[in-house]
Amino acid sequence: MGLQPTEWNFKGKQVPLIVDEGGVGRGLQPLTREMNLGGGGGGTTMTSYGPAVSYVTNNGRAFMFENNQIGIANFNSNSTEILYWHAKAIEGFVFSGDNFLEQAQNLSLKIGTM
Image 1 (cartoon, rainbow, N blue to C red):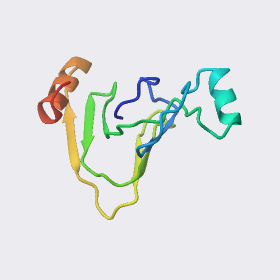
Image 2 (image 1 turned 90 degrees about the horizontal axis):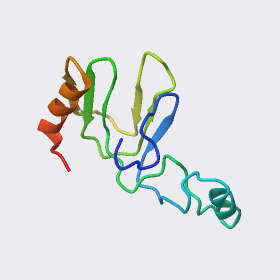
Image 3 (image 1 turned 60 degrees about the horizontal axis):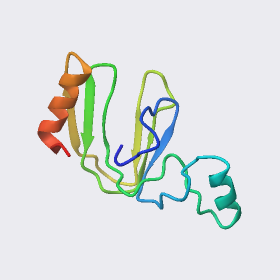
Image 4 (image 1 turned 135 degrees about the horizontal axis):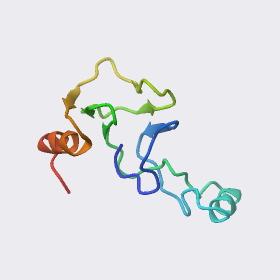
């Protein structure tokens, strides 16, 4: 889901697909709470300077979407990922693999590696 240094596993979470100030603390307490008291500069574990909609699942699938509109990725369900954009169309790719490494390699062929 982009540059999310605080989070790795998004199960049970909603991820905003928008560039947002990372903040001071990014959920680390009590630092974030104190920063938020002074005007909301604490951020959250989901804020990102570089949102990107690509992810790998534990169900043999990997996804990459090319939309640049504001959206939300919802991973609250155990069986379904829900992606929502403020857009009329969604463009992207679905990859499959027998294991996590193969899925990540297939995804990397399209988006590259850091």
